[in-house]
Structures are given as C-alpha cells and as structure tokens.
Image (tube, rainbow, N blue to C red; front, top):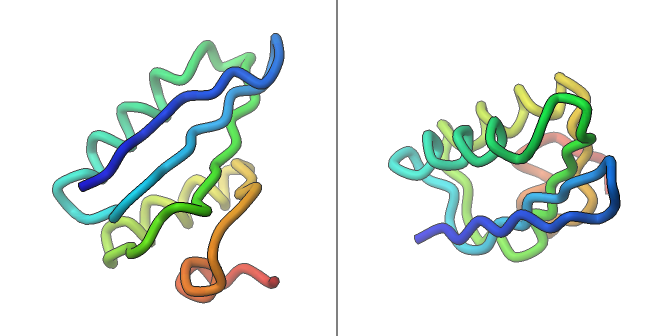
Length: 87
C-alpha cells in the first residue's frame, strides 16, 4: 500500500510525502499525483522518509524525477542506496 500526501510548503513549493511501498501497481498513481501537484510554476519535492520498499518500476520513476530536477528532501539509507543518492 502507498499513501501520498501533498504538503503545500509555501506559495511556490509542494512536497509529496510518500508512505509505504512504491510498487508497480502504485507507480502510475504516484506519477498522477506528481502531475497534479500544482501548476508547473510550483517547485516539487519528494519526502521518502516513510517509504519502506521500492521495486524496479518505482526506482525508474523516482530516478527519472530526480534527473528532471525534483529533489528528495528525506529518505532512508535503504531507499537512498536504491536510488544511488549520496548520504
């Protein structure tokens, strides 16, 4: 299961907080949430601190967002290693 919460930080920044497991069936929902997080003028950030597992489809999706400039503001060492993020 995956819970996605959109947190409005200020007038220009939104953070998507993910909780649970980012698996194939929920990757599309996550992509939809990213697209619906606000106008393109909003800066999107990802809080992955409460993500317990990410499968290959989820890793691909997250890496694409990161390459596109979306920062990860929090994540576990496990998720950081999956995404190749330095800790």
